Amino acid sequence: MINVLIVDDSPTLRHLIRAILTTDPELKVVGEARNGEEAVAMVARLQPDVVTMDIQMPHMDGYEAIRRIMSENPVPIVVLTSTESDIRLGATYKGVESGALMVVGKPHGLLGDDPDAYELINVVKAMADVKVIRRRWKTRQKPELSGDRKTVSRPLKTAYQVVAVGTSTGGPPALRTVLGELPATFPVPILVVQHISKGFTTGLARWLNETIALRVKLAEAAEPLLGGTVYIAPDGVHLQVSGQKKVVLLKENPLDGHLPSVTALFNSVAKEYGPAAVGLLMTGMGRDGANGLYAMKQSGAYTIAQDEASSIVFGMPKEAIAMGAATEVLALDKIGHKIKELIL
Image (tube, rainbow, N blue to C red):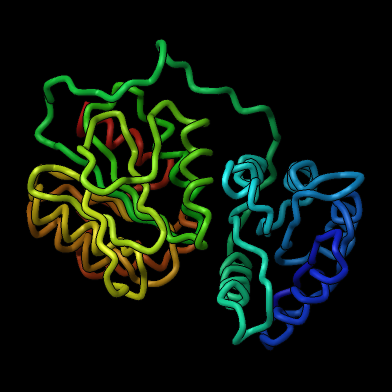
């Protein structure tokens, strides 16, 4: 049985979240907190397996509650939000900086009426298996930049011309860790597919852009791929590349169950770049990206899968490793260094 603590200042939303979670026989709601102060106390007393956390609350907001919980009684925390401005501006991802594992949309209806309800159950169950550690929170320093960030167009000294990345559950903090290792002068473009709730991609791009040295943006159709830039796949389209090394966005059927699909990106990169590419598959549920990473390896690309110990959810990397798709299997804190070693 997975014990869940619900934290939200709205009685209506607490009731809805409880109703959704208790439809699954493996989930048990052990308590409800109305604000951050209550959440901190109830985590210490009830020792839940997972906490769902609202952000905008009286007395103590979600950010402070997450920091307190992760420093005193660490537990997997899933941030739930429905505030459009927070989603658009990436404010909810500050919860990830404080120690939360995931950010998902608040459900608006019961199972059968709202896809977010199914996602909530799946994410809560996945997070219950994550081992979290005590954190001493401190203000994150902005990356040091030499003047304004500009795209890089200098001649390459590397055989690699692109990096393609796929991730899902637990991806935002993993992306920040890896991409945060790379300098603003990184000479090749980075293409990213992150499985995430609809409407959250803009906020993800904004948050990453504010916390790492690289330029981060949502990919736009037909734009040229430039060094020093991270291109995030937008909602509802496959992110691919053309023979002219430009962005291609295709609104097609899901592949490996997803739109955008990691495999769709990897297959395209394998075709257009072959051995001049680096592929990276990180934490996530399911198997999207495994076949695509294999295609990249078969084309001569250097492929990396995140290891089990550092993955929040080992599903996607595990599938790729099992089929021999990874040139190398690395812990999260080693991946950025490896990419620099290959390209810089």
